[in-house]
Image (cartoon, rainbow, N blue to C red; front, top):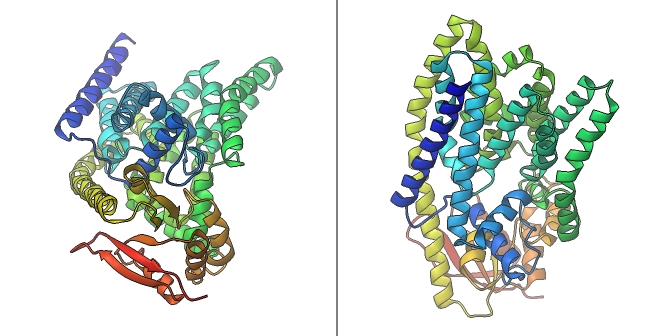
Length: 472
């Protein structure tokens, strides 16, 4: 046991050292995803008490109330980007230590256990997502520690964590609920323990439920509703959506790990864990299969600890599976190196956003009202009134997409875009000139809007348009 604790401390120290070295080498802090800047903007709104860009509460546009609160809390003493990075680092340390404890719980071989931890921290897109400025690393840590606490029979910590998990990421309500029901069944003859479990879970859930309800009028984040309505995938045939979801899960780099999840059935927690895995994948398949691809498959990665647990069990009793695990490790070392260009690409993407924001501050009038689809960086870096086409930060847009975009499988999205622009009385638009988002400019032209490019990047980037509304 002492050796295991030493290994956990070593993992924590190595992750901390790597994170601090990365901080120095990559200074100033740049996050690769626009959504990370929605979090920074929301944290600033929470601290200042006013949203000058969107005029909505801080929790609107936030998927993770827990992550937002932690960033804002650290922001009381630190610059917000640094606070977000250090929170990512702390979550990565928690995740790494949890993996170490999970690996040694099921795997007596130190070599295999070390390999599980190394892969869990470095395979495929894992490093990218651990430091993406969002709650992904915190979600991965939460799932890992839920598995650890369930296996170890934790009396109080597991129900406390289960109450918190849905507010780290909403789909984590599935494993949290499954583990609580599993505990209830195990303790079915001790009603006092069942009552304590649910009381503890309610204790950690209640503040977040109350905050969400007061701030947004909903106990679940509006972000998922906004994306489902805008991308409009729900009405496609089920088998087509399931195929897309499975393809993206395999492509994500998580799929090969999840193949071993079947071995989890050998453990006492097998049923709730496997059921949670199936339910989450089906939820995405039914409502938003393309979401599994978004932002380099980030929604797949909280499922990785389940696959790692499966591999730990599989390699425990089978030499053949140990060889398979070795091959998997070798393959993922190569894949991991091939994902580093995404990090550089993300920094270039944010640099383009920064340049577009700087240009807009210098050239647009102070009273400009901007229609936008990547709502984070402009909210963080400009003083303008902003209106989010997708609906993450402008909830009124969701109703338009539910009326026009969703029922038509996006064929009538142009009507929703026009209605949002008309109602918001926008004077400008900032639109990425790629194959998908660039269509938004055509959507506006289709309804008689005049678009005059004021800023046109020489290559892939954000075009700033001056808008002229259609004749009434």
